[in-house]
Length: 138
Image (cartoon, rainbow, N blue to C red; front, top):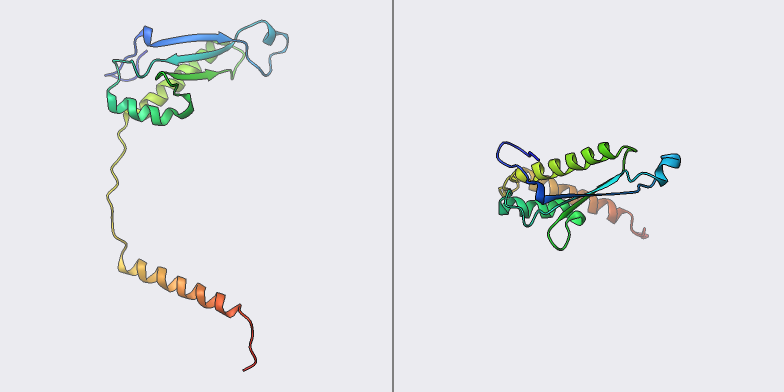
């Protein structure tokens, strides 16, 4: 399976399992195994560099198993072939998202004007709250 110009996944890294899907389908839902579970052995994959694997693990979340595989399930349509294509598209999108290196955040200081405005807003808010206090007979 081709991800981009540099990365291609081998057949042994992917495994598919088909099962019966819940949801609409009438009588057909009890007979046909249309749902697909796509399993990608990400941790053992020689196709992906280590930084990409780290980002992929964070992006996958609950779909990342303890043994380092990504499990994607799809039972959106009544067609087994269409569910298979959707699951593969989701995996490709997830890997492509992990390929982009996040931008480093450059720490900046707040401007004097923004500090002044923030403190002024806090003072105004405090004045409003003090006016809500008990009224005394002066």
